[in-house]
Length: 237
Ligand code: APR
Image (cartoon, rainbow, N blue to C red; front, side):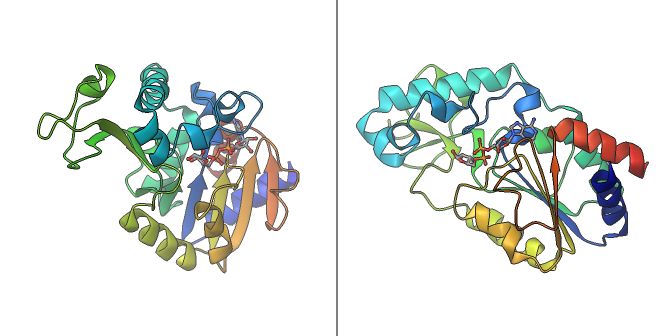
């Protein structure tokens, strides 16, 4: 309780708070994360499925995996934690959110300044000419209507560069932040995992598993994102 109360005070005192989220922010919405025991990478090898080589060499498996993720996403929606972060932005308690998540839930919950570091699952485009496609076309395994190329989700695959604007905005805000909240991420993936170290401000790690990853933060709060955010919100309101 001490830590959460102290963190609620930090949030209220901070003039520029930035949030970094990972897949643990969306598991309470019903979306699997990647590296927990129930995560996607327990059943799939990311290098053989979520990489450009995989997309080129084995489009069927690539298409099957992202079809499954799109269908899973269609049945899920933001949870109270996403709405609390959007409310905190509206009240000036949060400046921006840099997210590794591709589910679009922060924007769907009303957050406006969201930097999607790994892109967005529902933004389909042609892997050949780059023109946008539709989720329906992708699910039906249709080819690009312009060039006949293969359609793909607009997510950053392993080995691809992050969207420059999102990265630059996240880096800019991290450097200005006097408080960074890191929520629901194992911080295993570069370069997103470098962002918390870019701030001179205080850092707080909110995660279901805090051993190891939580070290090096000014504060580590063990718990579920939605529950911890709701507790913080009750203290701040
Ligand atoms: N509340 C808080 N933390 C949670 C919750 C929850 N409800 N559920 C899971 N977690 C924690 C897990 O314990 C784990 O430490 O969230 C973390 C999720 O870590 P990962 O599964 O590694 O997800 P993430 O860090 O977002 O992965 C980064 O890896 O595969 C790539 O592109 C993919 O964006 C992803 C990136």
